[in-house]
Amino acid sequence: MRISFYGNTLGDIADVCSGHPFRGTIKQYDNGDVNVLQVRNTKDTGEINQYGMVETKLSTKKQPDWLQNGDVLFVAKGAKHYSVLVDNILDRTVCSPHFFLVRIKTKFRDTVLPEFLVWQLNQQPAQRYFKATAEGSMYLSIRRQVLENVPIKVLSIDKQRQLTSLHRCAVKENNLLQQLIDNRQKLLDVIADDALEEDVI
Image (cartoon, rainbow, N blue to C red):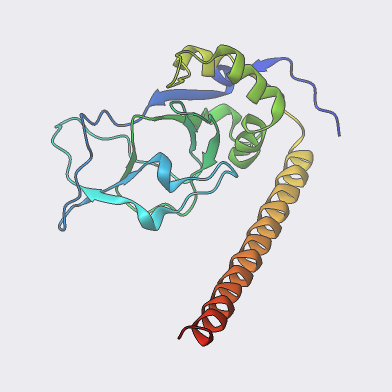
C-alpha cells in the first residue's frame, strides 16, 4: 500500500508540547509519588516499558501535564527520533524533556487513531524528513516547529486499523523471535560451560 503525504501537518491535527522541565539528573526516591518516563523506557517499535520508570518527587509548583492514554511521545533528542504510544499508563506519570508530548486535538479524535499516528511518524517518509531537519553534530535534536510541520496523511479509520493491526502482529512476532534467540543462546552458554568444565584438570 503506497501512502502519499499531503493535506495536513502534525500541528494541524495535534497539540505539541515539551516534556516535564526537569533540571539535571532525575533522582530516584523510595517514597516518590511521581513516575517519570524516559527514553530508556521506550523502544523504536512504538512500545513502552513503564515498569522500569523512575519514581521521584517534583519540586515545581506548576501543575504537571500528566500523561494520558492515547498520548503520543516523540523522542526529540538523541540518535533516533521515533514515537511511542501511551497506553495503560500508570497514574501520576510525566515524561522527561527528551520527549515532545503529542495530543490529538478534540475535533480529530474520531478520525485519527493515536496508534496510527505513532506508526506513521515511525515510517520512512517521516523518518527521512526528521533526518534532513535534525540539528546538531553529535547530539541531534528535532525542534518543536519541525515536528509540528511534518506532513501527515489521514487515511480512513478502517485503513488505519488495518495498518496498526499489521504492525502489532509484526512487533509481536519480532519479540517472540528475539525471545527464542535469547533462550537458545542461554542454552548454548550452559552447554558450553558444562563441556569446558569437564576438560578442566
